[in-house]
Image (tube, rainbow, N blue to C red; front, side):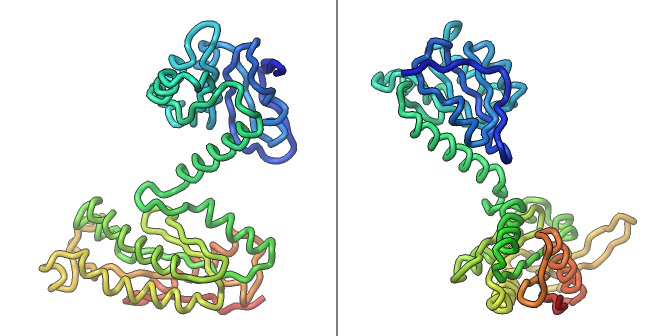
Length: 325
């Protein structure tokens, strides 16, 4: 097979870079020539030939995927794998170890050293490319997802809305959060606050999962902010269902004495004791059924504006933008 030649800089390609890939293989490696193929897919590639170079390059380059040959001229590739896992800057990289997969002991050692995958060094280049794509897809999905709820984050929601706008697909974007959530956190602590967020996440996720048709995506934007993209003709039913379910579930979030009083007492920033009623959910809706949007940011701004109107109500509520244009 054709030997791969080292490169010392990223490879330019048209379009946005898909991922940062570090290839660690000796000059005389018989691995498939990945350089041009990775660059053709718009990956930013760094190529090094020794373990020492790999550790130094990885610390600065912060690769998302590492293709790591076991047989290096200075140290074992498995030692490099362990070093990358031990460094906080590279600990989360997806590492594909390339060695003699016919050796079971080497395979086991490769995985125990921190490798995510172990392949024969002569693996077909097409399979390697597919595995790089899959590793990047999984990694970005995990990085974007909320660590608390596991839901997609703002980037996925924004991408979905942008695609709807570009494809002229009618959609509704719902932004929601909890009224009096800060006071709740102050009264019960962050652990109980997380429980409240999980309750809302389960409701939003349950309603979203039951939807038919497309577009359909529900996510956690951070803190007590949630979002949902759905077909415009079902958004009223969706919002009604979220409000109704939350108003039933909120009781479980309070101690009996506080619920019996109908409020919690919390000291505000001015040192005053204030009373706050139970949590309510506020939802704001922007829909392309009535108006067009130039960007996902514009749609999000309208949904947020409507959410602020919903918060003016003393109970759980939703408001939809009625403007046309």
